[in-house]
Length: 214
Image (cartoon, rainbow, N blue to C red):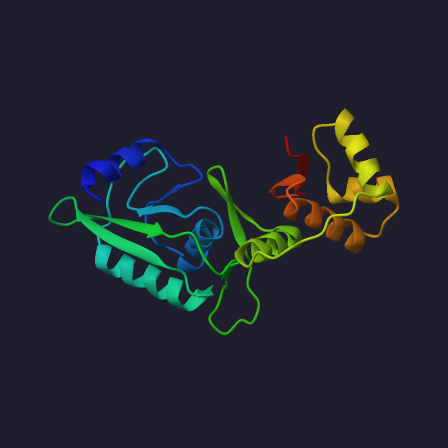
């Protein structure tokens, strides 16, 4: 990408595809954005840009790049594909651009430390990266390795769609209350309906929303 193309992306502001960081103070936190992009549609991470879209650059671009690339290699699993470009703004300041490619082995996880066994998956929603729910993780894994799925329309499903005829959205807990199912069964049923393209899932920080596919 040329610098004028980069500036066009930056001037468009943060979004589901663009994230700004002024510097890499805490690489273990920045990789959440990397993982979120890989788990969603890919995206562009810029280091040396303020939240107000000011391109301030990094005083120590090489060091910042080293820290972040090391964190991506060591704290993201599976390995994430990305491209990095450095643009020299002045003699002392550079702009870092990381193009994160959409992952082919979803879900991807961010680990706080290299030796940790368990990490957290994130997805991109608007200009934020939020932790993926167990349901989102199952759907990501299925979409990564698509296979035949069977959807049976029974009493529970009928109750759900009657509810959605009157309400725009529903959560797993609301579905559980409607049907009397336990949480694992309610969750599994709704995940299957998303996979069957009967419902769509809207990731949220508190509790995901499910809506009928129009």
